[in-house]
Length: 277
Ligand SMILES: Nc1ncnc2c1ncn2[C@@H]1O[C@H](COP(=O)(O)OP(=O)(O)OP(=O)(O)O)[C@@H](O)[C@H]1O
Image (cartoon, rainbow, N blue to C red; front, side, top):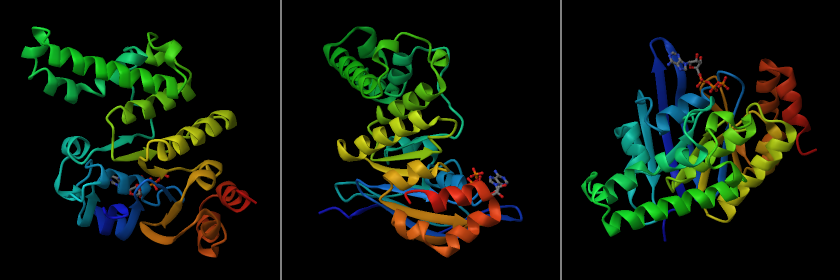
C-alpha cells in the first residue's frame, strides 16, 4: 500500500539575503486529506508554497512527494514546469491569474495543453486531424465541461473569463487546476475577497474535491470559517517556523496560536478563537 503521506517537507529553509523567511520547517500532508497552512501575515506560508511548487529553490531541506504507486519525487530538485507535469502538483495564486480575454472554456482547455500536445505528436497528428488526436481533444472538452458543471459555470462557457464575477473567477481557477488532474492541489488563499455565501460554496467545492475525487489538498487561508470547517489537519507558522499543528479544535485552543495571532492582528485572533465555538 502507498504511504499515507503524499507530501513530506523536512527541515525546509529559505533565505532571501539576510531574511530567513522559513527556518527548518518540517510538515507533512496526508493523502486524500485537506491540510491547511495558517499563520499571521509574513509568517512564511507563501514562501513554503513557492518552494513546494518550484518557484523558489530552497536554501536547505527536502520536499518529497509520494505518488499512489509509491514513486517518490524530490520536488526541491525540479523546476516549476516539471513539478506541475511530472509530480502532478497544481497550484493557484493569491491574485487571480486567469487569461481574462479567453473564454471560460478556453481557460480550461489551455490547462490541458501538455496532454493535447502529446496526443498531437507535437502538432503533426493534430494538423492532419488524426483519430487519436480527435479523441484526446474530445476527452479534454469532456473534462472541461465536467468541471464547468461542478463549479456551476457551464452557462458561462463562452463568456470571457475576465467578465465573470470575482467569486466565479476564483472557482474557475480551481477548475483549471483540477483539469490537470493533479495528485496534490495547492491553493493560496482561495477565499480571499469572497463574501460569506461564496466562501461557503468554496468550502463545499473543496470538500467534494477531497471526498468525491480523493485529491489531496494543501491550503493557505486566512478565512478561519473555511479553514476550521474543512481542514483535516492544520499547521500553524509564525516568523518562519512551525509553532503548532493538529486538528482544527486542537489548534484553535492552543495558547501559542492565539498569542501569535494576537501579536499580529486582533481581528484575525478573534476569528481563530471564535471559529467553530
Ligand atoms: N522574494 C522575496 N524576497 C525577499 N523577501 C521575501 C521574498 N518573499 C518573501 N519574503 C519575505 O519572507 C517573509 C515571509 O513572507 P511570505 O509571503 O512567505 O509570508 P506569508 O505567511 O505568506 O504572508 P501573507 O499571509 O501576508 O501572504 C516576509 O518577511 C517577506 O517579506
